[in-house]
Length: 463
Image 1 (tube, helix red, strand yellow):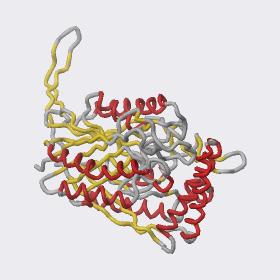
Image 2 (tube, helix red, strand yellow):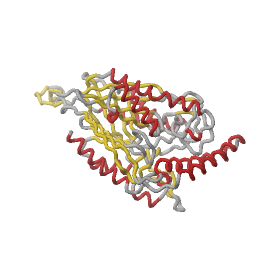
Image 3 (cartoon, rainbow, N blue to C red):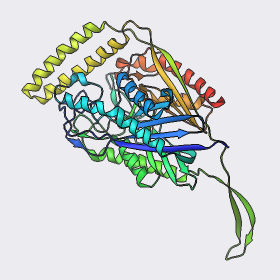
Image 4 (cartoon, rainbow, N blue to C red):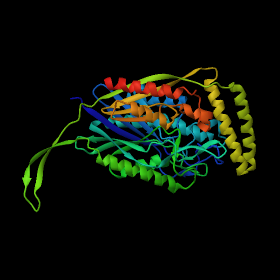
């Protein structure tokens, strides 16, 4: 029988007070005051005799391709695991350190760079530590339901598509949980997968927070269910039912609700199921049936990894030089307003810089190109498939992939292995809105992802 091994490692990556905080165009402050909860990078290594995979959960809004490559290369070098077998996933909290819009920072840029510079070795250290903790395990999965998310594509009475609350829009309330136990059935690690934007804490909040994923993780670990990893789902058009505020209790509440449901599911998972055999009867006040329970090992565990580079079709972009010049002019206006200290004007100017900067960055990456290379990675652990892509896929994409998957448990995620970019479904392009305005992709992209993902899952099943 093939043995399954797993180990976990973790490092603290909490930003220091004064580190630039990022994630909101309406934000007037630049530096964060401190952290409400710790920030972590958590690594899970799963192995058989011939295959290893590293799954990393980071409390961060995300990293561009340059920093993603640095982190993954450092992990691969230290662990000697092939880089195609390393998955770097971000929770996508919007109230963490600014790790992706350094060009807009005029105060504390040295701290932002120092924070980023320290991450590759720290994250790689967590993965290396997980390797040192490998022990033989069993793995099983289950699902539950948590209703903290709502579709965020809201059409106003004038027909404008904005980021709000669309109570009739698609949402996935499924909580997917994977539990790893040692051979004595003691939890080693628990994966919690859920699809919802961590935008509870917004431009008003000057404290770093891991948002609801950090709180959910803490709740699961408080229930003695091993080290918890949170894997963000396809949350491109879903956010929390109440958010965009500054009340720290709100994100803690959402995280507690999710964590308690995940804990309930994890507690009910049996990694070593038992077969019952009727043994006879015992007379008592009532006649009681007696059973013998015999542990039954699950099918041989399988760990396999498949990675493909998709060619996703792009929109057309204006020349980057023109957009860069516009962004630089808006930055000069913003700096002038920051010196005057008018918060309302600063907020509006920051929003203009953010919007212009997004378009400039897209043009620099994709001007003149027809397709973008986009990684699709699948990790199989027995009956569980962990499928991921970069960027921010709409929840409908995940629902189609899960429906067509041959696996009993399919956890589809965005926000993995670097890169930013919304991945809307075709009908969203007709409706317009923020996600469509800032996506680099053409309307055909989502259908390609669904088709290639389901094919990859079928291929993974045969390995």
